[in-house]
Length: 601
Ligand code: AGP
Image 1 (cartoon, rainbow, N blue to C red):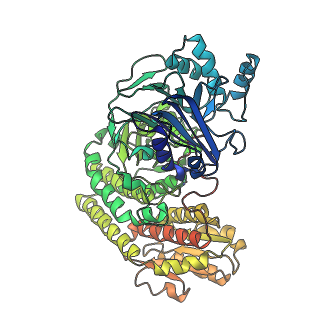
Image 2 (image 1 turned 90 degrees about the vertical axis):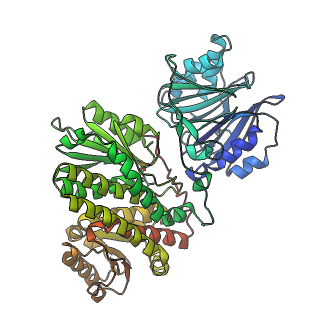
Image 3 (image 1 turned 120 degrees about the vertical axis):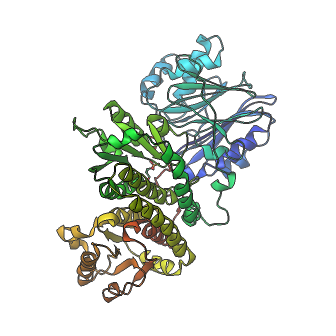
C-alpha cells in the first residue's frame, strides 16, 4: 500500500525524503514522487513511474529543507506519472500526498470544477490540494486552518501531508482511519505512514489518532484535534534499530525474519513477564473468550482456541475480523483478544470498536507499540518480535502463537484451572520450543530439497488435526502468498467429505504429524491419500518410524511435547514456502496484489 514521508529541518530534504521512502518500498508501489519547498525555489514536484531509482535519477539537490514524498499503489486511476503523488492545486502552490480513499471525491470534484478547478489525474486524492486551495483563500492564507477546513469536507479515510510554497517553515499533516506517525529530532520533524521509514533519524515518535491535525516546524511538533483542542500526548520511544529494518546479508527480508525466530521468540517470552504483571484480575471474570483477527493472525487465534479451552476451560470463539460485525448474539460478554501484528488492520480496528460498543473487555495483541489497535483496546500485549518487513508474516506469527500459550496458561493458573507445576512446565516447554526452532534452522538442506519438488506443483493440500489444523491453514496461506501455488489447508478428517475427489498423482499432500491423540488418525489420513496416488510429504517428530511406512518424503522436527509442535512445524512450513517461491523466481517480499498492512476495510 502507499507510503508517505515528510520532513522539515536543516538538511537537504530530497536526500532524506528519498532515503526514508526506500524503507517503505517493501509495501509495494507502482510510482513515486517528491515535492520540496524553500531553498530559493518555489514548489518543485517530481514524479515518476516505477521504481524509486527512476525518481532519484530525475532529482538534483535543491537546497530545500522542507518536503514530502510518496509511493503510490494504484486504487483510483492506472499507474502513471499523472496519477502519482504529490498532487498540486491549480496555482501550483500547494502539494499533497495522501494515503486512503476519499469516498466523496466525485461530488467534491464536481463542486470544485463548478468553481473553475481543473483536474489532471484520475485519482481521488487530487481533490485534496484543490480543496485546500479554496480554503486557503477563505482563511486568509492560514495553511493550518485551510487544511483543517478542507479535511472537514472529506469522507472516507486519509493520512495527508501538505506543503505550501509560501510556507517553507511548516509541514501540515492530518489523519483519519489511515496510519500516520510523527518523529522528533533535534531542530527537525518527520512524518511517515510507517515508523520503519524513520528509524535512521529518530526513535522518538508520536502516533497520530483519527481526527487529529499536526503542525511540524523546525523546533516543534504541535498536534490538535480537528475541533482545535491541543493534544498533549507523550512521545513514545521505539527500541527498534535501523539495522532491524534492513536485510543484513540475506536475499530477502522474509528469510532474514524466519532465521530471527529464536531471538524473536525469546524476546516474546522474556518480555511477557512485564506485561503479565500489568494484567488486571478483572480479566479472570471472563465467561468466554473471543479472538478476532485477519489472515495469519486469525490462524494464531485458532491455535489460541485449543489453548484457552485446555488451560482455562472457557469456551473460545475465533472470528475473522471482517465478519465479526455480522455476529448477532446479544448474550455475548466475552473477553476479546484483537490480534494484529501491525496494529493497523482496518477490519480488526473496526471489530475492536464494535466489541467495545457492545460493552466487552478488549485486549490488543500487537507487535507495534503505539499502533492504532493499542488505543482502541483497554489493554495491550506486545509481541516484541522486532520489525517485520516481508509482506508474508513469519516471526510475528510464531510470537503470536507463543503469546497464546503465555496468556492462556497465565489465566488458567490464576483461575485455578491448572496447577503451579503445570503452569511452570508450559514455560519450560516454551524454552524447549526455541531450541527446537534453532535445531531446524541449523540444517535446512532437507527442506530446500522438498521445496524444489513442491515448487513444480499446481495445487497442494496441507492437512492436520486439532492444534495443527491451524498450522495447516497457515502453511497453505504462506505457500500461496509467496509462490502463487494454489494451496488449501484442511482438517485431515474432512478430506473424505469432498476434497478427496481432487487428489491425483500431481496433488502433493503436506501432512502435519504430532505424537499425540491425533497420531493414529493422521497416519490413517496419510494412507488414505497415498492410496489415491497423491504424493505425501510428512512433517513428523524425529525418530518416528511408522510414517516412513507410508511415504519416503519426511521432514522431521526435534521431539518436544506435541502440544507445542505448531511453532516448530510452522517454521518448517515457512521455509518450504520461501524456498519453493525462490525456485519459482517469485518476488517473495512483495507478493503481487498484497500489502503488509491492510488499512482499508
Ligand atoms: C500474512 O502473511 C498476511 N500478509 C496477512 O494475512 C496478514 O496476516 C493479515 O493481513 C493481518 O495482518 P495484521 O496481523 O497486521 O493484522
